[in-house]
Length: 274
Image (cartoon, rainbow, N blue to C red; front, side):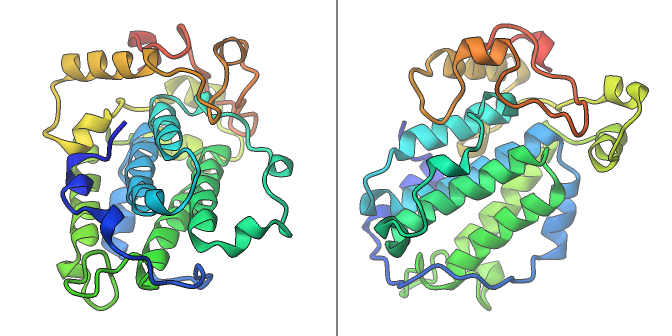
């Protein structure tokens, strides 16, 4: 797996990293962007989260020893269905005393995974999409990923001149054209105990291919073929559940909302999954 064209052409890996630590402050999020998030289906939200996360993951890829490609692959698999993600086990992560947390690039790798996982864990709760968006903006603000010559990724004071900012809005609009939400989806995710009728009407929304983000939007039949080929090509990804566990609903089970689980053969795509 290679960086998508819109990232590859920026040659992010060659830009020096100039930061000492990751920020912790909350930053205001553009209300127009928030509105766009609220108009996306659950699958659309996860696809946007995966696309956003790629900027960070590829940016730091040259500066750590983790498996960037497998994390990106897992995120896009989760855009097909979130139950593919291996359960979040905090005890399996490095302890706070681990030297890893003192390395900003390694900390960034784990942080983007953490926010993405929380988005899945809380059923695409809008608060966690806000947290992920905030984190991406926040990291970019620090100058960690800033090209000082042309403000390549900085959002501070130059929002409409930032390549990342412009791309983010355009991508949200592109995903909305493929996978908009419905009133039933919104109510189902916001209700603590949605009715059975509401649960049966719930939809994950149309799937989004990674190629839809990095290239022109595919026609539906080509998108299905692309996603199916992508899923079938996944092998031994440590961030994803094993096929038998997915088929037995032993990975993510969304008890809080009683949302219908994945149907069909795991890591393939068919009409049952729409």
